[in-house]
Length: 275
Picture (cartoon, rainbow, N blue to C red):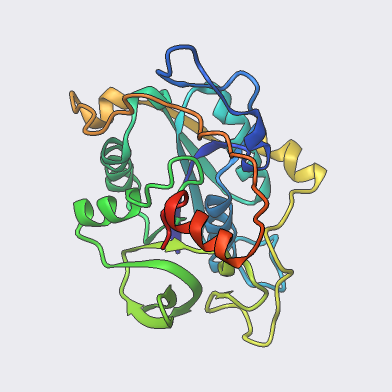
């Protein structure tokens, strides 16, 4: 199975306190931010590796995993990290965040899919910076591929994939034929969430994503990483969505002590406007 995994660089969500708004509110000042792979995309990469191996022999890849991202040259560090983890090749589409919105990202990925012809596209359910949750759906529509969103488990079958989806009120189980697109949720990296045809169903993975050993990190420097121009993939396509202004959330007001229940009800009704 050939799998294309879409990755995105995001500001480390654990350092949200470092976010600063540039003067005038036109953009977020990224100077103090630390970058990492979008966590849900990391989960998608782990799922792709599990689907292209026998869990008992993870060093022997039985398929191909291609990692692709859009961003400036600095994101190649994160792509090399994906290669060290187990991806076979990588593609970087030269672009800045200001040049992109969900539709443009989907258009660019569509072109890469048409060139690579993967059996499966995996990506995180959403990016933790914009939280738009739209690129996967747009891409599936552009490709006219079957899609399963918010995947908690994936099992490879002879005719395709069996996917359990997290939905309101429980789990929905669907089967999709390949080629297909699947977006994953955080439960996808549980020990029994993903199985290829080669992995025994009694086998259990370690919980979470795998980490690259030093030899794999060194080998990743020699793996192929192609660079493509955004204009070559999307032509003269323009942004459909723009951020007009950024503003920090209002400061939280100090709490107030109340004398009794009647005073509490009065303040809730007349000041907080919740009754």
